[in-house]
Image 1 (cartoon, rainbow, N blue to C red):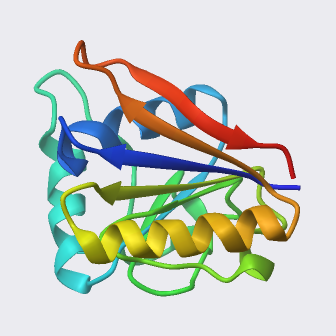
Image 2 (cartoon, rainbow, N blue to C red):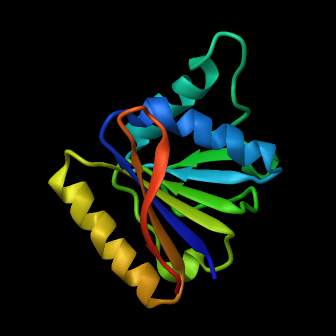
Amino acid sequence: MTEVLFYHLERASLDGVLPGLLEKTLERGWRAVVRAGSREQVEALDALLWTYRDESFLPHGAGGDGARQPVWLTDGDDAPNDPQILFLVDGAEAALDAIAPLSRCVMIFDGADETARGRARAFWKAAAGAGHEATYWRQSPQGRWERQGGKQG
């Protein structure tokens, strides 16, 4: 079963969290797809991953030959790089059958957005109901991610 992680943004922004999660993904030797809710968000993430830190960048692509990209950015259902992990951001969604072959699926949602919280709750229920291991992560006041809940599927 796929491990499904829910990251509740309260103290940090997507721009502050996603690059670190992608770095950890690449350190594992995994390939990732980042699915955004709009083309504009894909373009913003594309720019961010080139410039988020002065001394490095995250290898990625949002066009061209996606099969060669360790991180693929999209606003669609495409996954040309044979990923082990799917990140859902900016209201993006995934069907349960689409995440089944993955090692992990990560939904990052804005805690201040009622619609985003509702989508996360619905996806949690569906994922857990389908037997996936769902875990919920929240940032502590010190900025560390702490597991707040989870249920074995």
